[in-house]
Length: 264
Image 1 (cartoon, rainbow, N blue to C red):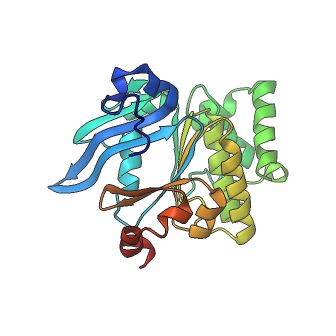
Image 2 (image 1 turned 90 degrees about the horizontal axis):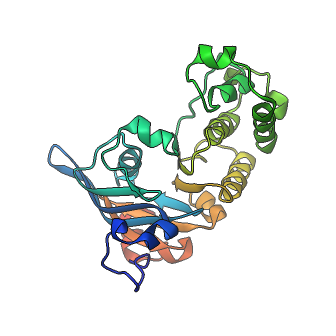
């Protein structure tokens, strides 16, 4: 794999400080086995600092399982997960989240009965829970940050609107913005373009590309037009394994990828 450099081709990430400088996240020898079925079988998988990586693959390819392993929701059967210079393989899920890994699932997680602004307040660092968040007084810096984020995703005019009245695209942006507010270094974003209009899809792509300045992102996606807009390195998973990796234009002509995924 081309992310293993000639200077230290056989070394484990923990054995060389150069790994920490190059990669924010690195999986090595990771498998996830459920009732004898190997859902994930990754030899190596590395994400650079401030990289946006797109993961594609057919249903059941192991995309969600990989995210589950990274976030600690699923403990790998074998292998190690390194994040920000630490082995987080056996850390509890809550501790991994606090270390700076955030995840947005395919269905946006928002509180319908709360306003857009109140949803954002819940994601501010500090005590968690609806009551503690709504009774606490946010600082001017926090309020300014919320308003800046809402303006960035065109939700400023909807700040006092209950989330139940938002369009699907607006709910996606609210979920992503809430995640950003918690200040994660690594963002896992699951199918952000699903169910969006063309204009919403374009704005979502612009937002994710802008986030690369301050965050590292892993985006799971099926919409090839959207993947093309992101113009980023693509990893193809199939049957739990990394089948191919590279620019989309290179990956999409790979005969194995065409047969297993794109040709279907």
